[in-house]
Length: 324
Image 1 (cartoon, helix red, strand yellow):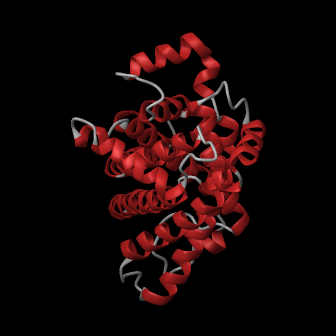
Image 2 (cartoon, helix red, strand yellow):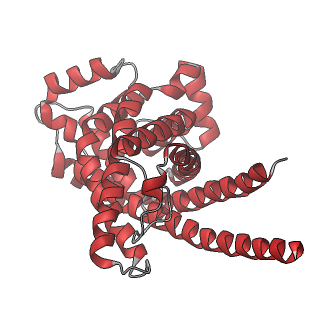
């Protein structure tokens, strides 16, 4: 094995583990918000002219959860598939994103100082491309868990366990059922991730120039956290129509055959506002989850990079001594 392979393998593994840790943390902490978003979008999937939208649907969803025999299990229903999906999704996403960014990184940008991040610096187009490709790849691999998560959170299906849910989907819909809504998911996630990386990196750059000193100190974690919240909220608003369509397809694949059919039916029966169902909850959750995931991930990588740099310096010094 070459020196390059030996160096790359542990670093890739650490990116995977850092992504896994950050994803699980954000998924578990924010599961109640994700559950509420699914319930709100589920309620409007049965819309009539008298059926509640927006705040009314949210109040009904909250009342339904409060009426459960045990409040905490009701709020964290679906936490296991959510943690698995978000944890491994983040691990795959951050690992593939890091690999793509290293391949696309510019030496001129990489030498830029006074930045809150140790990650590779890219051009605007490269940021868009890397985010979109990495998210689409991770989304496809984790799509079965996404379908299981959405249906497990919904009250339309009385699943008592994940194996039972998986078996039911396979019996009635086959393998295709595990990929329901992938088109809408990909169209939602690819632009979201590409724009997110672009906004996130630009926000970090401007905030770093304003608040960090030349040594690179001055609240890197705070800058990353603020940049992630801003980017997550903006990109969530832009991509929410695709999220609403995706949820309908995954909950009722017989009634909503594909992305185009679902969007047309939603707009014709419920109006344009149906495409914004769950927007407030999604913006809040995505902003918070992005802030948690990216801040934890970047801090872990920052500390690891410092450790790797020290070890490389020690090894370099030993080699020089050996030559003498």
